[in-house]
Amino acid sequence: MTRRTYWVDLAAPRRAMPELMDDTLQRLPRTIPPMLAWFRRVRASSARTGVGDRFAILMLGVRRARVEVTEVRTDGFRLGTLRQHSESGWIDFHYRSLEGGRYRLRVVSQVRASSWFDRLAYLCGVGVLQRLTWEAGLRRVLRRSGGQKTGHGTTTVEWP
Image 1 (cartoon, rainbow, N blue to C red):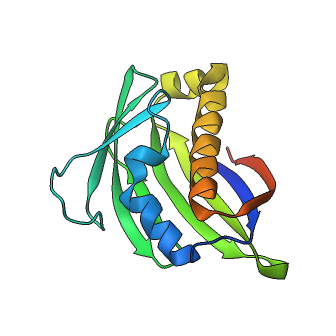
Image 2: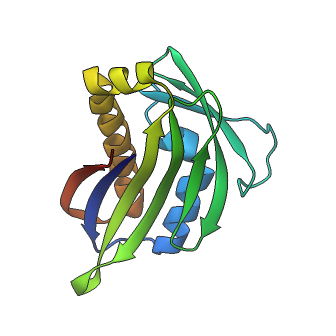
């Protein structure tokens, strides 16, 4: 089991944080750089993205995956991985308040590799590309917030 956390701290956002999280969900395919992971909402309609909606993902142009929106909250949303995904678990996008009117935007994933091949691929470089994907997505959300970056980081915790 692996828990990865990616974060960006920001100050003075020009948008309300709940609105920013909703915008991130509604614009998820445009939030993640398509060269790293191309997201496409499976349901082709103009309805708002919500619980139960699914996304097909083409990771690095070679690996197909699917995720489903499992939870939507005012502070963020959660995606659950589906069959074909290289990892089994969930990814949570959210923010939390910090001291001094600052906020922390976070992507937290708690997953396990779906196969030994996927675990080996992660250890041989896919993990770095995954970090770049989520960090780029967080930078795009930061730009949409209109705020100033005050810090960033990544942590990984692994359990046998």
